[in-house]
Length: 252
Image (cartoon, rainbow, N blue to C red; front, side, top):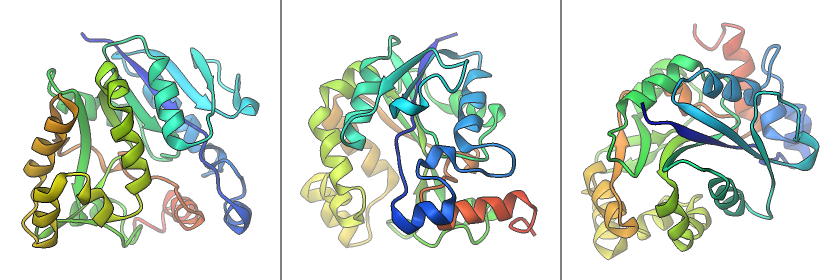
């Protein structure tokens, strides 16, 4: 069995009133029922036989808060700095890169995702069609990315070839800068990909092929992984949804 280091990004913060609504400034540490998303992610990864070392990129005050973490990395100035620093601390050929604000992730979800990743994939990212995601988390979000005639959302856990990712630092930084705009993200695919997006002809396969060309590796979109890998707490509203869902109202 291939062993993978796991890199968890735990430096994201809420600002101002969002932090007040969520009950914590650091996203990973908001309370959902009796635990935190960070605890859920760390426990799910640690339970996987495929995970070797567990590396967490976090503010200094979080260091040492979990005994099952093997290495702590100081947060950088930006999200992309945190990704690069975490991957630079990984020792395996491929690594799991995960957000820390996934309140419903379980060990079985991690295993389900990993078993779907081809052994020769350098970048593997779970994707979900709108109806598929909302069937599990109804009314959880309204924004989805349009890819051709369908709408998708993506997971917050992926597999990356560490060496290739670090060699593509510039692409990672550009992707972070563009992540809030679907049009900007489409532009990263080049003129052909942008035209396909604007004309509604872009397909997941086109994105896979173009990202493979850009990175020099094989990029694969993973279908069928548990939607809990995409249900994050990126806003105070999503934190409130997670609490309500956990209490049983959201699944009614």
